[in-house]
Amino acid sequence: MNILRLGDRVALPYRPRNVLIWSGVTVLLMLLSLATLSLGRLGLGPGELLTLIRGEADAKNSFVFFQVRGPRLLVAILAGAAFGLSGALFQTVTRNPLGSPDVLGLAAGAGAGVALVTLFSPVPLPAAVGALLGAGISIGLVTLATGRGLSSTPRIIIAGIAVAALATAVTQFVVTATLRDESSQLAAYLVGTLNSRNMGQVGLITLTLLAAAPLLAMLSQRLQLIELGDELATALGGRAEQTRSRAILLSVLLAAMAVAVAGPIAFVALMSPHTARMLTRSSGPNLVGSALCGSLLLVLADLLTQQLPFLEGLPVGVMTAGTGGVFLGYLLIREWRKER
Image 1 (cartoon, rainbow, N blue to C red):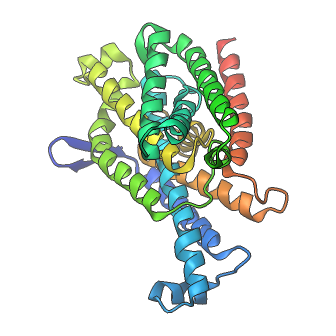
Image 2 (cartoon, helix red, strand yellow; image 1 turned 90 degrees about the vertical axis):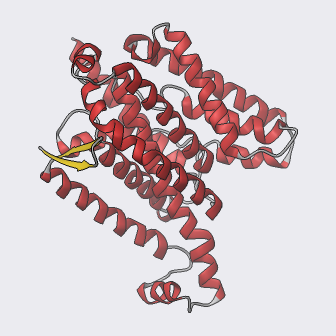
Image 3 (tube, rainbow, N blue to C red; image 1 turned 135 degrees about the vertical axis):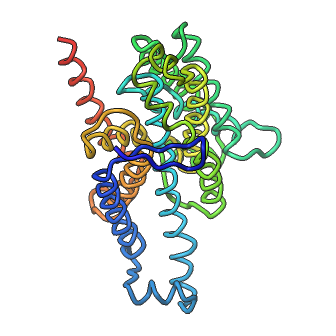
């Protein structure tokens, strides 16, 4: 293993083999992104794309590229990365393969917060405010329910499922009981959708990731120590409780902002860290890999829902929920076999 040092306080461990793997994933992500921009009812070939980049395209092509497909793709890449990072942080902090914003109720709580702010706030508030409030309340309820914080592995999943069910019930009630134009729009958003994204949402999730990046870099090595257990991590200077608290705050922020711009898209946060570990055949947190896998999974899911005839028109959250449900079943069976 090699160490990349960024100043005196940041040391990032990496393996040359993993660099090759993530380079390949990046190339695949670029190809899928190109397909997303090109394919559709209005096809945009390489010539049209180059014309668009030079600013010489007609108004119709420019609108489709810059107002529809471009923002949609950027939100998919950036929100997918945020979901992947949040999932990796939660799985490290809880030391539980099922730890993710989906299972722990954060995504549902953030969605409920957006719904409540949109429908009932006396003054217009951004979706990000509702998402942060909802996610913060959800993680607080999970922490209280476990009684011993988020390191209490046996109880945390049950508490998360209960909080998610409560948040979903609140959301469904306010959406169905409120006969307003916003209700129908919220119903689609709460499934998880990339339709009608805009550059304001791209800016929000971009700023979130830029703000989180240096903090994640500083936490990276300490997160490796947490995998060894709190006592050993503290003995090695890891400051386990401080690291855990900071990681939780970052996880909540990343998950909430991803939900704010794309809705509570299911199971991307759960699948991304596991996919990263499967590709590298290594244990422990892999933040860069989880972010790349999150982007790849969400862009791929969105491309399939747009191009496959039997999926056309479905929100991307339906696709990820179906795939993630199967993946969750696989994880549950694997954990059950380990305990036998």
